[in-house]
Structure formats: C-alpha cells, structure tokens
Amino acid sequence: MEFKRNIIITGGAGFIGSHVVRLFVNKYPEYHIINLDKLTYAGNLANLKDIENKPNYSFVKADICDFDKMYALMQEEHVDGIIHLAAESHVDRSIKDPFTFARTNVMGTLSLLQAAKLYWESLPTPYMFSSSQGELERVLFYHISTDEVYGALEMTHPEGIPAPFTTKASSGKNHEAYGEDFFTEDLKYMPHSPYSASKASSDHFVRAFHDTYGMPTIVTNCSNNYGPYQFPEKLIPLFINNIRHRKPLPVYGKGENVRDWLYVEDHARAIDVIFHKGNIADTYNIGGFNEWKNIDIIKVVINTVDRLLGRQEGEDMDLITYVTDRLGHDKRYAIDSRKLQAELGWEPSLQFEEGIEKTVKWYLDNQEWMDNVTSGDYQQYYEKMYKDR
Ligand code: NAD
Image (cartoon, rainbow, N blue to C red; front, side):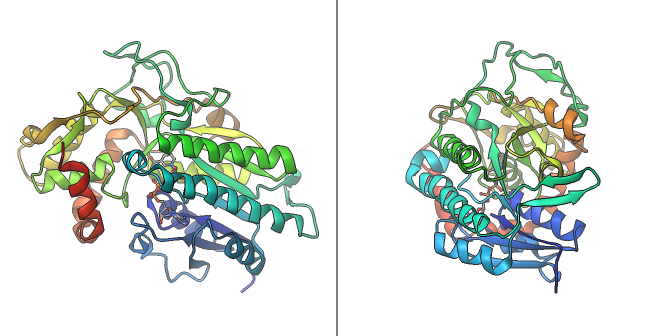
C-alpha cells in the first residue's frame, strides 16, 4: 500500500508515545506510522491494543542506540518524519543509574540523529512539501523533551498568587501561581537531575544538527503529563493504585514541590500541530499554566478515587506518608506556553479536575492493565526503591 508519508515514532509503546501513535494512526489513515520501541520495562504494547490491526500501523522492536538498524529502517521505509519520544524518563531511576540515561537519552538520540542525517543527505530532492502557503520546509526530526531542562524556579509565593495566565487546563479551582517567573523558550538550560541533564544534552545535539548540517529539526519542552497508560512508578497512577489497595502513599518531603500538569492527549494534540505547522529550528514550550503542589494533587486524587470506589470522600487521607525528599528535588516548574498558543493556535482542551476524574476512572476501569504492569520486574523495583524509606 502506498502512503502519503512514512513516519517513525520512537518510544511509541510508552506512556506519551502510545497516545501520539494512536492520534496519528486514527487521524491520518494516509500516513504509515511505524512505532519503533525497545520495549524496556516502560514500553507496553498493550497500550496500543485498539489500533494494532490498523493497516497504517506497524511495530518495530529496536534500540535507538543501534545506528545500523536505524539507518536501514529509514531507507527501507522511505521515512519522511521522525517523532522522537524514546527515552529513559523517570528521575528517581536516573539518580540510581545515570549511565542508562546517558546511553539512551544522549547516545541513543545521537545515533538516531546521525542515521537521519545520512539518510536525509542521500535523498534526491530537498525536504519540502506543498501546502496552501506554497512550498514549506518539512520537519525531519522532531524531538520531544521536558521542561526540567530549564532547572528550577523560585517559590517566591508559597501560598500562591493569582496566576497571570490561564488556559482551559487551569480553569477549575486552582488558578494559582507560586512565583512570578516562568520557563520561556529563550531561557538558559540549568538541569539538575541526571534525567534532565541527559535530556538537555539530547536537546543540544538536536539543535546542533540543525545549526551545523541544516537538518530540519524542532524541539519541544513539555510539562508533567498525566492520563491513561502511564507506568505506575509516576505519581498519579502509583497513588491511584495504592489508594485502591489501601497501601501507603509515599510523599517526598512535605509535598510542597510545584509542577505544571497537562493531560497527555493535549500534549499529543500539540505534537500533531507542531509536527505539521511548526517552524523549522524553533523550540516550543507546551504546558497548561496549571501549577499544583504535589500534596494538593494527592488530595484531589484521594477524594476522586474514594468517591469512584464508593468510599467516603477523603477517608484514605491517612495513607499519606511523608518520606525523605528526593535528592536535589527541584522546587517549582512552571512553563510559559504562550508562543505555541499565539503562533500555532494550540491550547489545552481539558480542564484539570475533569482530566483527573477521567484518569482515575480509566485506571479503576482497567485494573487488568494495572495488575499486569505492576507484577514481576516492576514489583521488585518498587520494593527496592521504597524499602529503606
Ligand atoms: P515512558 O518511560 O513511558 O516511555 C518511554 C518509551 O521509550 C518506552 O516505551 C520504552 O520502551 C522506550 N525506550 C526506552 N529506551 C529505548 C531505546 N533505547 N530504544 C527504543 N525505545 C526505547 O516515557 P514517557 O513519559 O512517555 O515520555 C516520553 C518522552 O516524553 C520522553 O522523551 C520524555 O523525556 C518526554 N517527556 C515526558 C513527560 C512526562 O510527564 N512523562 C513530560 C515531558 C516530556
């Protein structure tokens, strides 16, 4: 079957990647979507059961560090777009094992970039496509990154001030900001954790491939995502599952750290818009102006799980267990996504409390998915991480 475009999405079996794959497969039947994933502990093909038999979807099990395989695949598939999400993504794991993060996030991204560059240079025609605005340069390598590369912002207002900007995501109860500053695209990188250092390095390599070789690249930096199919080592699915089983909820420090939260499908929608309309060599921040202290999110999650399980709302608050803070725990992340909103017209579609309700309901309705994921290796990891706290 002849497709209009052949697109590799790396890390498509992971949390965000599976939502991006699903969106592209369903929205663009004329595109061939190749999900390339190593299937680490975080990669799970069960995340894509609903689309796995679609004619425009295929899966390739491979490691992005395998340069020869990456180059061969790009040639075989006549690839004309790479959306790169594959990564080691959990900060706690990066603190225990930084080498794995350097290998995948830095060397893996570099191997994929170098393969893409050689492939791109071998193409007979320039990398353009026609649109109603005439010939446009098409992005070859779209790199997905995190707001954590910018470092940490000051909590100048720990009690909260009215947020200067809002979006649909922040249109519910919480309109607060916890400081005046936001991460903007021109901010200097100041990563603190091995995870964010490895992502910062990969972002620099992507930009260097544009600046040095002229390769058409885009980088985006997004805030914390939440939603279905997230591996339950991350705060929201971990806590939903623990509340369900009435297990302790380990909260770092006093739970005062602040993050901006975005529903994962809104991130996938942003990736779609930027992949098709973003300016080559640009950076776009993606976020919801939706700041929350961890402890406040945890309370919303407890109330929601309790209500949906028919328990008395808030009756599981005593599961909250404060544990020693994460090493080098960044205080506040708050991302400024006004450029993306103004230039490309994207904005979040879901209000935060609605998103949490939808998310909790999904995990409670998909207990088999959760039970499968939380058995075996993951369980051992969990025991190891939390036994000495
Ligand atoms: P995830 O851990 O759920 O998924 C990562 C996927 O990458 C898994 O399917 C895994 O099997 C695959 N992978 C790992 N190493 C690989 C390798 N060497 N070769 C091929 N595949 C490999 O991660 P996520 O939360 O979905 O994050 C996806 C991307 O988005 C990452 O680049 C992350 O840095 C970025 N990001 C995540 C968030 C968030 O809140 N989760 C926010 C902003 C940006």
